[in-house]
Structure formats: C-alpha cells, structure tokens
Amino acid sequence: MASEDNRRHEKFIGFFRLVDACDQRGCPICRCLTADARQYLEALIYEHVNDPDTRRRLQASWGFCNWHTWMLRETSNPAFGAAIICEDLLRVTMGRLERGAGRSDGRSRRLGRWLGRLGRPPRRRSLEERYGRRPPCPACRETAAAEQRYLLTALRFIDDPQFDAAYARSAGLCVPHLLGALTLGNGTAQVEQMVARTLPKWAELRRDLAGFVRKHEHRNRSPFTEAEASAYLRAFEVLVGAPGCGRAAASASTRAGRVRS
Image 1 (cartoon, rainbow, N blue to C red):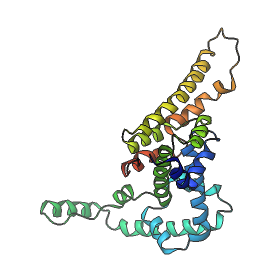
Image 2: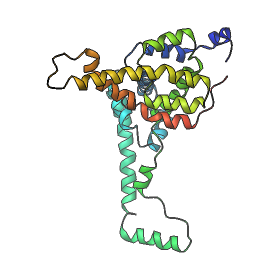
Image 3: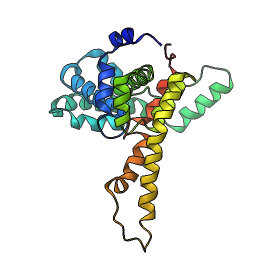
C-alpha cells in the first residue's frame, strides 16, 4: 500500500462520505448510493430535463427504472421537471407502439420467419424485444459507477485509522457489497481485512435473530430487546442491500480494475 502520508493526501469526498455513512443505519455503501442517486436526480430534474443528450438517454432506456422513478418524489418540488420528462417519454412510447402496430400481424411474423430461412437479414426486433433489451436507466448507470468507486475506496482505506474506527461503529457491508468487494479485491489482503471486520457484525445480527425467535416460545417471559425486535429488518438489508441498492454490485464489479497496492 502507499505510505500513510501519501494516502492522507489521496483522501477525497468519497472517503469522507463513507466515513459519515458509517454512523447511519445499515450498509454504509448503500447509504452513500441512495444519497448520491437523490443528488443526481435533483440535478437532472432542475437543470437537464430539456438537455438533448439527457432526453436521448432516457428515451433509449424507456425512462428511469422503477426505483429511480419513485425516488423522483423525494427530490425538492419534482412535479414540473418530472412532468416534462414523463410527457416526452409517453410521446416517444406512443409513437413506438403506433409504428409497431402495423408490423405485429401474423403475416408479418410469418414473412420474417420465411426470410430467415432463405438467409435474408433477420427481421427487425419486435417492440417487446427492444423493451426487454433496453439499456439501463441513466441513474442506474451512475449508481453502478459510484458503487465501484465506493467499494474500491473502502478496500483501499480499510486499514486507515479514521475509516477503521468508523467501520467499527457501522453495521458493516451488506452481502451484495461484500461480494462486490471480493471481486474487486481479487484475493488481496484488503479483502481479507474487510471480511474479517464484517463477519463479526453479521454474527451479532444472527444472535439477535436467534434471540427473537427463541423468545417466541410460549413459556418465555423475557421481553424482546430493541435489537431483537428490529433484527429481521436489519437482516433484510444485510442479505440483499437497501431497497434498490444491492442489485448493482455484481454488474459494477465485472467492470472492475484491481485495488492498487
């Protein structure tokens, strides 16, 4: 690893966001990604709704995904910008459906199969196929890129005293993000440290879950602790990440570089 002096100069906003997120509930990377997604949508809804490149990306992806669409409600005064985006997306979608309706009859499909058997160029993909193969929504692409940066930052600074103290206070990484770190770290010592500091947190959660289950026994007279009562909800996030966040870890890590040593 780089010397401590060099690493101190290399700390940047992502590092400090991770440190701050360690004092919040749940996986710190999930917390950062949720905050970053809101910030991205906030900027888009106020500054870029009429930007041609933004419009083209949204049209190509058929809009935002479910998670980021509903997250628009969490931005400040989203109605005007969201209405502009939605009207444009409905216009484009209606046009696609109207143009596709004329090609959707059985004769067109049979003609396409016949041309394929003759070695002619394959028929144009159906509207349903185009929708199924659409690119990710622009906010998801931003999230995946940010996710990789946060994972690399966590690994790079895992033995930094400031980050180490913050991580000790946190709930630890969720399963998707720890597995993403395993892929990015590629068997490095940093990954071993991350796993070693995360597993005891999961073991503590298991104890809370077991206590919650055990105290449902009909002869039990002991009340649930606060940690036991919330354990199943915390387990949801550990196992799959915060709502909408955990799913991008695998795709982000496939594009990964390696942790610098």
